[in-house]
Image (cartoon, rainbow, N blue to C red; front, side, top):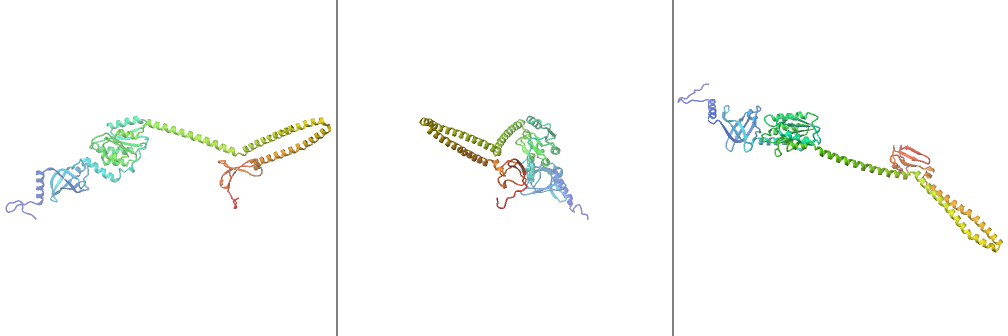
Amino acid sequence: MTHPSTRADGARILTVAELMAGLRDLLEQRVGRIWVAGEISDYYQARSGHCYFNLVDASAQARVVLFRGDASRLPFELEDGLEVVLYGDVTVYEPRGALQITARVLEPRGRGALQLAFEQLRRRLDAEGLFDADRKKEIPVHPERIGVVTSTAGAAIRDFLQVTGRRFPSIPILVAPTRVQGEGAEVEISAAIERLSERSDISVIVVTRGGGSLEDLMAFNSELVARAISRCPIPVVAGVGHEVDLTIADLVADLRAPTPSAAAEMVVPDRMAHRSRLTGQATRLRVAMENLLERGAHRAGRLGDSLRALDPSLRLSAQRSRMKAAIRGLALGMKHRVERMKSGLEPTGRALMRASRMGPMRSRERLELASHGLVRVIPGMRERERARLARLAGRLDSLSPLGVLDRGYALVRREDDGAIVRRADEVGAGDRLEIRVAAAEITSVVENVRVPEDGA
């Protein structure tokens, strides 16, 4: 079907395509590239990587397209509700006949793009749990080897090596050199972390650089570096920038150090303090061992005294000594008594002498009577003293442990601790016993313990 290109009055008739093309050319020529502010609404990213959204304000809206190449250069993520200022071309999307802005540059309104990117990534990783305290790994007290990810041309590595050399120079340090800023630096940093994590001799990894602007630190605010740190099986310490700087790497790392020098102090022990601590521990250990040995010696001495006090031979010896002393005392007493009796007879003898002057016959009779009385008294006294001594010896013999053993009894001790066994519940099957009888010592093993029904 064909249509006339002009009217009868000479006016030109346009096709829809011609109208849209004319409007596009008119807008591009007359308006061109402009800055427009608004809020993102209905944001959508296609599989191709192109981004589509409406830019709206209180009373109007415009359709915006951001092509994949320009979108990949954005340091932050687009989202609904985000206020932006964009720079782009005003044109017409001919297939739909709609006004459209092709965005070239976008900036967040009211705050920097880098700061926004930091906040967005921080919220997302925090929601995933990458900052949780329970996933932090413990930093070793005395690392075998330290891996360092940093630039070899910066001041950070010099400060780090100076501190570690002063504190503990014998700990080896392996440096994985990388760029720490600029395009592609995050790729090098994450690759260096992964290389060091594959080594079995690395105890801790330090990711560090000196201070700088937010733009200088962007490599350490990248998701790529954050993921590499979170996947690392080796503890990671981040010492990025100055104390006031805070990066995503600091939040994901197992330990954050405010500066490179502080990172060195955190991962390397102070050898002088370490030596002093070891010396103190050795002193305390020696004193504790000496006290333990001294207490053991005292306890062994007390146990030895107790065992000696329980030895029947020692008790018998003591009783024999006491019996000998008693016999000596009895003999001495008898001697003294005889002497006293003799002394008592002396006055009688003198009286007899005096009586002899009075009459020989009378004196002789009295002397015979006295002699007969003395002869009768002395044997009786000897028998009584001998009987008394026999009774004492019998009592001593009845008190002697060996005397008890002679009657068929035995003294039973546990072999392991020497304790005397008095009741059935003090031994069990398998216990070794030492049994002392009258003339021998017997070692036996308990097979079972049987208590009579009457409890005897």
